[in-house]
Length: 117
Image 1 (cartoon, rainbow, N blue to C red):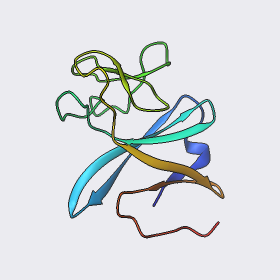
Image 2 (cartoon, one colour):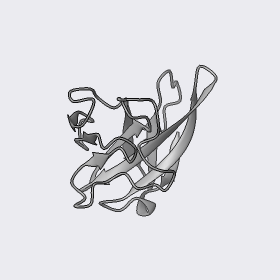
Image 3 (cartoon, one colour):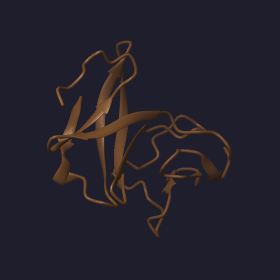
């Protein structure tokens, strides 16, 4: 599913989106990490709460990692592994993000839609 225009996600930024899996609404976010696109379900692995405070701020102050605003769990942005905090070793639920033409697309679990390249 397309989530935004590619120029709306420059390096060091994030964008949130809503999707459904098995009829259940979920929130995800995509990030541009130095030109590499990643996407995850917006749910902390410690307790199932959004990582951000509904303000689209996912990065630590220095911009090097994702952080849970509620519990301080710190995640590696490229693989989603918790590096510090209450859920060390757990991983964010990863979604596949890619750029197709001038749009950022996320392939969702059970997604059968295949964009034309």
